[in-house]
Image (cartoon, rainbow, N blue to C red; front, side):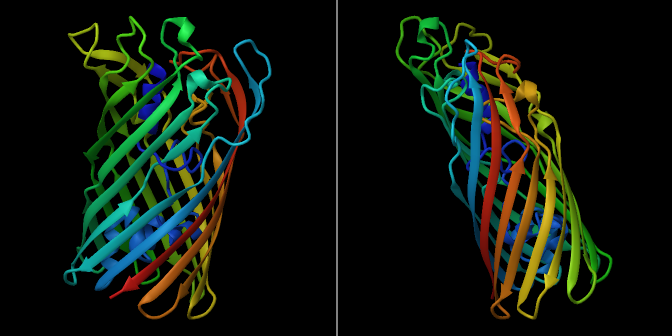
Length: 420
C-alpha cells in the first residue's frame, strides 16, 4: 500500500494535470499575468487576480473591484518505449492526462486611502491522470485524481506613497482518490485486483507580500506563500483477503506542501511599452517523507503503517515579458519562461512524469469601458522528454517498468474585471 499513499502526498493538492508547472503546481491564477508568462506577476497588480502572487498589490485598486476568471487546461502526455517486468515491449499509451477547467476569482474593497481588504478563490495545485487498469505499470498507478480549492481572506496596507505590505490566510480543502493494482503480499494479488485510497482535509497556511514603487513607472514586488501542513483523512479500499490486515481501514497521512517565494519587477518604458520579469523558488524539498497511520495495525505503539522518504528538489521559475498598448482600449501581451521539474530520474513515477519545461505565452486585454475590462491569454508549454524507470526509482514497490514520456500543455485563459 506504500505506493498509493506515497502518491497521496505528492498529489494531495491537485486538480488538472501533471505538466502545468514544477511538480503539480498550477500557476494559472490570472489571465492577464498568463499573457506575459507570469513575468512581473508579483509587481504587476493590474487587477485583483494578481493578489494571488502578491497581496500587497491590492492597495493599487480603488473602490470595490471584482475579478473572475477561468483557465481551460488541455494537457497531453504520451508514453512510448513502454517495457514490462520481463523487458518486453508493451503498447504505447496515447494520452494519460485529461483536460480540465480551473477557476479563479478575487473581490477587493478599499476601506480608506491606506487599507484594502480582499478575498480570493483559487485552485493552486492539480492533476488527473488515468491509465488502463491492466497496463504495464498498473502496480505504480492507474487513477490519480485530486482536487484542491483554496479561499484566502486578505488585507493590504499602504505604509507610505512608495511601500505597501499585505497578508493573507489561505484556507485549503483537498480531496484525493488514487488507485493502482495491489502490490501487497500475497504476490498472487499483484496485477489482479485494484487498491484505492480516498480522503480529504482542510488546513490553513499564510501569505505575505510587499511592493515598492520607485515612481509611477517602476516597481518591484515580493510574495511568499507558506507551507501548508496537511493531515489527509480517509480510507483504504481493497479486495477482502484473509490475513490482509492493512486493507479496508481508516487512515491518515501527515505531509507538508511546498512554500513559495517570488520576486518580480515592472517597468513602463514609454506610453506604449512595458517590460517585466519574474523569479520564483518553490521549496519542494520541504516534503521529506510521508508517514501513513491506520486504526488497525500490528504496531500499536506508533500506529504507523509505512514511512516513505521523498527526494524532490527545490525548483526555479524564470520569466520575462512585455506589454504593448495598441490603442486606448487594446493591449497586447507576450512572455516566455523556463520552469524546472521537481522530480529527477530517481524520483520520477508514471503518476507524475515531471521534467523541465518552456512556456510561450501571448494575450490581449480589452477595456470595454472605464469600469469593465477583459483579458484573454494563450500558452503553449513544451516539456523536456522524461524517462521513468521503476527499477531505478527509490522507495517504490511493484513490478519493474519503464517508459519515455512526451508532455505538452495548451492553456486558454479568460477573465473580466469590474470596478464599482
